[in-house]
Image (cartoon, rainbow, N blue to C red; front, side, top):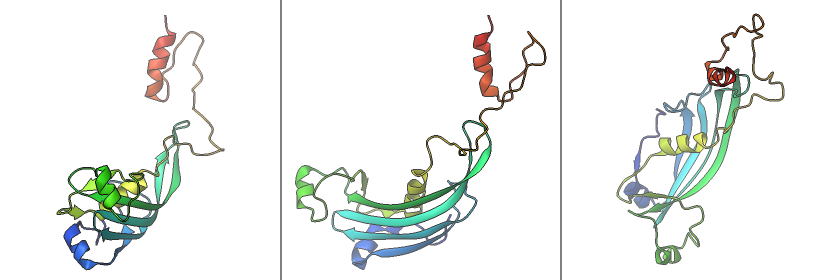
Length: 172
């Protein structure tokens, strides 16, 4: 848990009347990283919406999907999000009456206006969205490691147990 990123009541944010600023420096429990997550985060209450902006960075260690080797990956994000403050997603009429939103575009999350905004959860979600779908260590990747068979006709155990299912399909 990052100190200072405790959940903050939305009512206090509304009464504040100005954006709330958080400095981020520390490790997240849900995201294992080599370096502390560093950056800044701002949240501003504007009637029916919460405007959240942040710039964050850290370095994580990932496993390459091709060679199964470990490599370091720099996660950076510069995010801005509109969060609807209401029990359910807004109607067309509510969107038209809101001065900050002209269209539903980008508005996918709802928060209870009597609840809390959890800046640590927001930081985790934004960094998690930056993780690559396919982990690839780069151009220097040697590819999958395949052990040569000991002798003709003898089947050797593959290095990676995930290959066992494919090896079973080869046998008559």
